[in-house]
Amino acid sequence: MQPIISVKDLCKTYSSGFEALKSINLDVRKGEIFALLGPNGAGKTTLIGTICGIVNPTSGKITVAGHDIKADYRAARSMIGLVPQELTTNAFETVWGDVSFSRGLFGRKANPALIERILRDLSLWDKKDAKIITLSGGMKRRHMIAKALSHEPEILFLDEPTAGVDVELRRDMWNLVRTMRETGVTIILTTHYIEEAEEMADRIGVINKGELILVEEKAELMRNLGKKQLTLHLQAPLQEVPAALRDYQLELAGDGNDLVFTYDSRGERTGITALLADLGDAGIRFKDLQTSQSSLEEIFVNLVRDRT
Ligand SMILES: Nc1ncnc2c1ncn2[C@@H]1O[C@H](COP(=O)(O)OP(=O)(O)OP(=O)(O)O)[C@@H](O)[C@H]1O
Ligand SMILES: [Mg+2]
Image 1 (tube, rainbow, N blue to C red):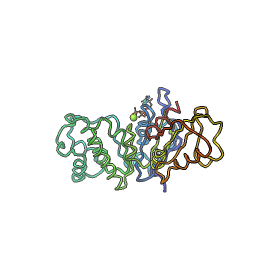
Image 2: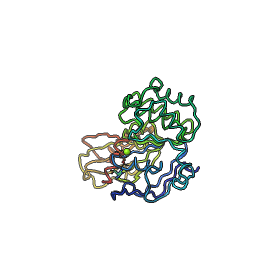
Image 3: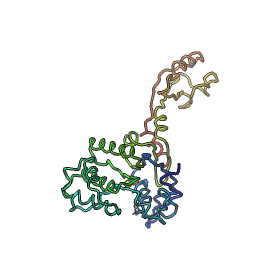
Image 4: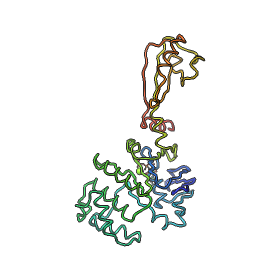
């Protein structure tokens, strides 16, 4: 299937000379939830901005549902809803007025029933006549989401949708995003909450210093997450893993003093019992052992650190 968003060799150097994006290649599939993770300043907002036509790319090619974002800007942009990281809006307009106006900007016919449903879904209905300046921070964010949804986009970008939002609202937003996905909307979100990516995403991309260093199915990452390690501290160091133990996923560490066994905790059998028996048969004794498990957070931190 043709990707709904295609980014090819995208580079962005700001006028200051700063290289914010270094040859990014990314395909987003129609109907998926794609989470973009990365530390502050990695280039997430810049990448989203170029796809939405707000930031001018230095080189590269971007298409949205086949529309080139430069040559065919209007067609591409009309498919996209954007909830920006920085909240900017007309403070003295009412919630209802601003959201309705937003729909009109995209040339859509007025649809009060739709706007009402959006505001109700976002628990903003009782604030519909309030001026935006009188909303709380979390309500302002919900208002921005309402605006982005007002013109019924097929693709929704959420740049840090749940930053500074309380736990309950975060859950509400996750539900809303899932409901939207069920109606076929493609969703790209950035987040600093690893658990959010874990909970929501079909695929995860990690960006660091302007480079996309990993794009993977979440399920695949979760399988990695299921990987556990058993470390045996040996009584006497080994030069190499004995031939009799080749069938196990074993590695020597700590100058041969530690034997590290990697296993899948989700498998029916971990193989630990058999390993311990075979170790005994091979005359290998250990004085202590410990287990550890990698989390998505660790995977993420390691990925980003390895590159610095
Ligand atoms: N208008 C600009 N001019 C010059 N440099 C910029 C501009 N906008 C962003 N940058 C730089 O580009 C880099 C990437 O910024 P970007 O906002 O894309 O990061 P981010 O991944 O969204 O970070 P955060 O998690 O903090 O939102 C940063 O080093 C930033 O200082
Ligand atoms: Mg950002």
